Image 1 (cartoon, rainbow, N blue to C red):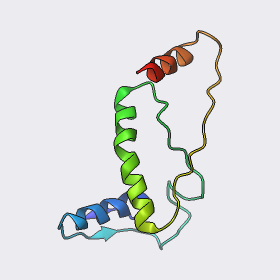
Image 2 (cartoon, rainbow, N blue to C red):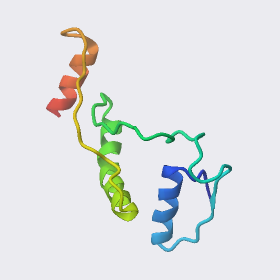
Image 3 (cartoon, rainbow, N blue to C red):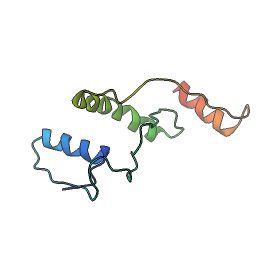
Image 4 (cartoon, rainbow, N blue to C red):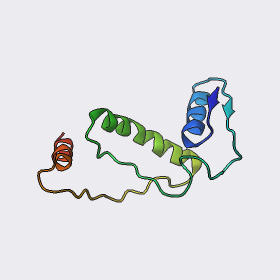
Length: 102
């Protein structure tokens, strides 16, 4: 049983069902409601995290997002770019520099 039928819960249900599991997906609101964390048309998917486990998680998830996009027959990710702004030598820029070098 999966509680929460948002994008994460729904995709979890699809993935489990594809692996042969019997799945029940429970959602308290109607489809396409505006109360969920993924409501709206804009989100950010990034690898710019200073913590390695977040970077690993995002790298693992990217093919799953691409698979979801294929299944939905909808473009779900648009690759753009990003800019991080901070004073030279700050902890933020040092951490991101180390990340990019990894």
